[in-house]
Image: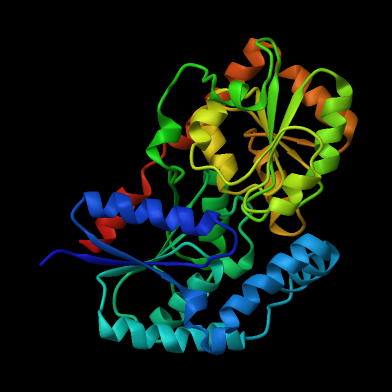
Length: 354
């Protein structure tokens, strides 16, 4: 009988789900029966869906509120109180685990890591529990000493996690679709789609799956410079797409081809889109990141030399101007490529499966 792996995620945006899906594909290719479970679906009375809408609403309309919650519970020095939500998810996850016991569990979202760690610590989960951290800034809600191992985005975060949990933590390569890692010549798809001229420098502006952040103003600043053609990636937010004065795209599955034709990516979340850009060799600039983990993630990526963090319109244009130097672009690409040389997550997980 083959090994079974349960991957825990949460549909907060699209990044966690995309990582879980790609990990499941890789494990299946190795003969592992991999299944994906959204832990918010374990919350009764459709309250999980309500939590998604609440979080999206805060990030979109009341970022100051999410920032306050993040500072109070995610990164405060004072330990957070026990979460009734985590306890409820853990109880229902326990029941699911007994229906079809896996040989290992991997969490790609922090609430899932808390629930699995709780079960592992109390002995109700008898198989290895691993955490695949998808944030560059690892806040404490990712951390539970009950989990067996942590897979982190870089060496710095791995060291910090090991010190705080007392558990093994290693860095692993970004879990992105293979298409992002294929070397390809500059694609004309993006240029044709937005009607750009051959010598235009096209800059992608990512607003995530939910289309959040002050990206309309960002596009206006770039267009006003006269040096760059901004193209806003609006995700599934059609209202945002209607508000953008200039090229704007909705949800796309051909992002590797679009990135191949871009000059740079401006990002505001420090999430999966940044890792995809790193895999493509596309330079990343963080600008006006969303509050909480987005802001901390942007700062962490900049400290690691993976991206630049612009804080004013002038700095943003200046960082884009620096990328005209081929040597600067090569240096940035080499630093990002270092992420990809780490051990693949599936190799570490396969070892845990035994």
